[in-house]
Length: 129
Figure 1 (cartoon, rainbow, N blue to C red):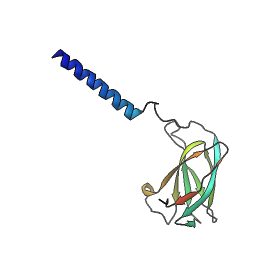
Figure 2: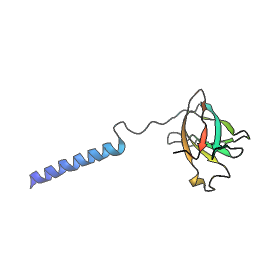
Figure 3: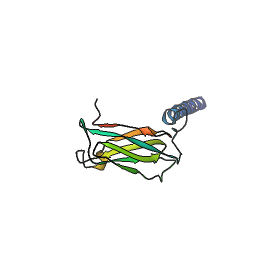
Figure 4: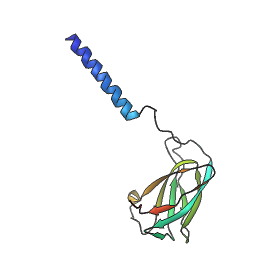
């Protein structure tokens, strides 16, 4: 009976180890930016094949290492361009425009890595697949 308990314990330990590696990965948690340096992000916004002439781009630099970082808002200009400063590192972008769905939760979100020298990021929605 004792031999069976030892075998079950070994099997349980192996299962727990495999689960932990699968869940947490071998390299630990993913790296996120902790930088408070700002850089410019700019680009154009195309909606349904046409340049957007109004609306805004919401850029959110927050993550679990910088949870209090406020989202930035960039107005979409009449020529379809936007520009603002945000924190260096990964940022989440969301476009708000009258031709898109009204529910904020349904707004398409994009992820972009903002580099210290500035980043040009053109947004094309809907994404062609």
